[in-house]
Image (tube, rainbow, N blue to C red; front, side, top):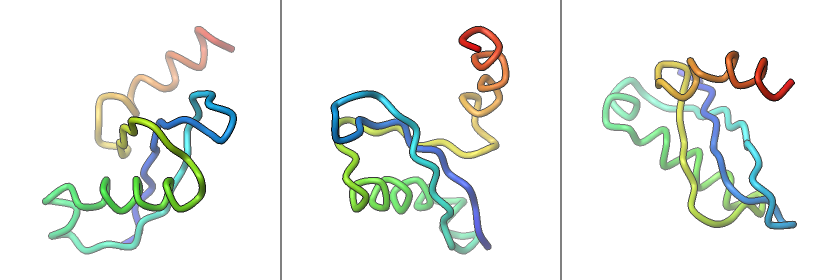
Length: 73
């Protein structure tokens, strides 16, 4: 299966930024949270750094994005 995972990290300029990963994984990997690790590894490979937090559409952070977009929009 392919899952979208957002990773909050720092870009090359040191600014906080979202990286969107599309992770190919199994149901077992998702159940074990491995898709987050894969997404973080992808972000690092693309030059993102610092403390990274990953979440998918089922997490509370994803459900808060529309509200945050309205507040910051």
